[in-house]
Amino acid sequence: MQPAIRKIVTYTENTLIEGGKAAPRPLRLIGVAAVLTNPWAGRGFTDDLSPQIRACAPVLGEILTHEIVAAAGSGEAIEGYGKAAICGTSGEIEHASALIHTLHFGNHYRRAVSAKTYLAFTNLRGGPNTPIIIPLMDKNDEGRRSHYLTVHFQIGDAPAPDELVVALGASIGGRPHHRIGDRYQDLKELGDVHG
Image 1 (cartoon, rainbow, N blue to C red):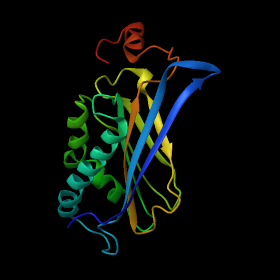
Image 2: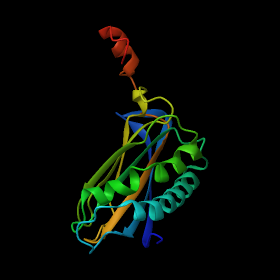
Image 3: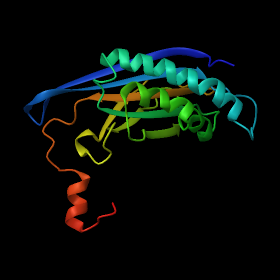
Image 4: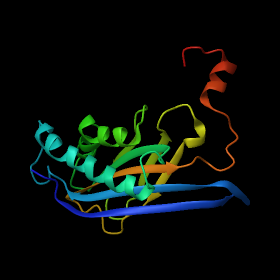
């Protein structure tokens, strides 16, 4: 069973000025989302989600990774990354979670961008025009706060009640004028050597 993808949406945002001051380097945020039929729609409660996960998640991971790397220009260009899923109102949060919380999905993206950290995520339920909120973190250093960012966009007609939206997010650059330090400075200040 291949995922029944209705459309793929790409969102790009470039920040040139932040706080009234020109960014030393523009921040580029990218989101790519697939709108697809929920493979568990109309089945009632399903105990075993794994057949659909194994059939759909790798395909979605491959397609969305290809799209986001193309939008960024290369995997190397991507510095921050994350993922998100929304199930329509007839689905379960578990359905949204099922397709993104598996290595069958995320490893495509991790490999393409040579990442070391886990993918930050959100998963929720909503109707058409529900905000797609993708938290980002540095692909190699989860304590680097400059790359704690959020890609935020909407699709006017998705998800329908029997659909899912599955998305990847990326940043090229970190927050302009970052000046709040990183997690490691706090740990040192607090005397916490274990983090």
